[in-house]
Image 1 (cartoon, helix red, strand yellow):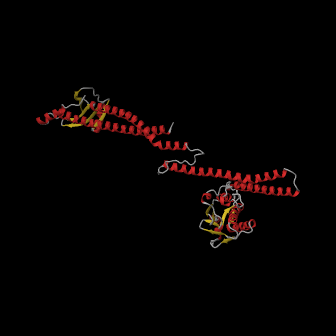
Image 2: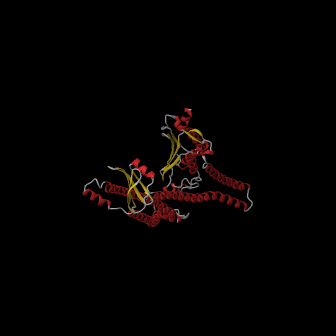
Image 3: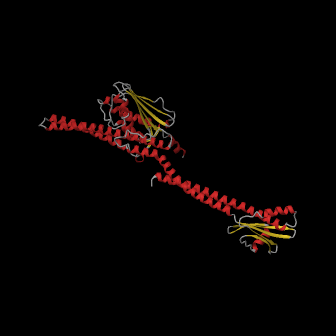
Length: 465
């Protein structure tokens, strides 16, 4: 069943329940009012009958004539009876049958007045005190007119209910269709989006209702998918280029060497060149393996409490071994007084790789003789490492791709590298629940900022025990 039909039926069901309850309440209270009102009229007829029959010899002629006039204003199918206190019938008048059981007579004597129904007839019995003794007066009638009106009301309510349900079903279907129109529009727009049309977005995202929120969420997901597809395409293109270059060089060198016999020195040169290209491929493969390892779940990696400043010194030593001519100005002026604020929870090998990659990039892309500034600090919750170089910088259109493996900006193609360092660093930092940000300007330099959460809270909790 479609949502439209479900909404229509639910709307109709709720309305039907309300309408049924409303009709029952109207019918019940109308019937109750009719019954009570007719009992009062019958009670009045009982008093009129008693006054006419029992008080005729005790009142004036004028009062007697007035009682007689009221007595002859009979009700439909009226039947009146007067009994003596011993149960013998004293007076009876009217049409129809009115059987008065003995227990009812006794009940009237005890209570003074009773009201009850005998089939469609309503009966009122009352005790009437007279100078000749106590009498029991019974008056009864059938409220034929009001019963017909009540029956007519029942028919009107039933017909009104059925007619209202028809209107409600039609209105509910139209209402459901109108309510689901934005969803239908969203579905139609989503169906048009494919892998080749990820630039398309849902149009109903400018409001503040739930559907607009859904459209906004879906558009954000499309942004992430488009970025992921673009990164994948860039990765495949750059990886293919990086892997193809050493393979092509190796194949070319070997093919040329095999064309004719060569001198021993020539074969040694070819083998040395091939070995260099093979090492390059091994380096690329190791980089890809490290990226894969840095992307696994933290539960599979051994974590420990580490002093970040000690990691920085170790990374500094390794960076100098790889780039002996590199110059680093390490700034510890902003270190906190509490050394525990420099403690992070992480894997020392992975964090060391991340820091070394950042320092190596600063060394590779800085002009010879220029210092790269390395500043370590801490705020209330994070340890912050900021590495600033005065290198070639990164263009704005290339900055969005720096975390794509094998991507290299156009202005650094002549500098040795594979485009693996920053993607690997990002994966490691994210693995440790940290963040990495890059601010760069062409020909001015680049600022790389690493932020990692402090482990001081965990240490304090352990010391408390």
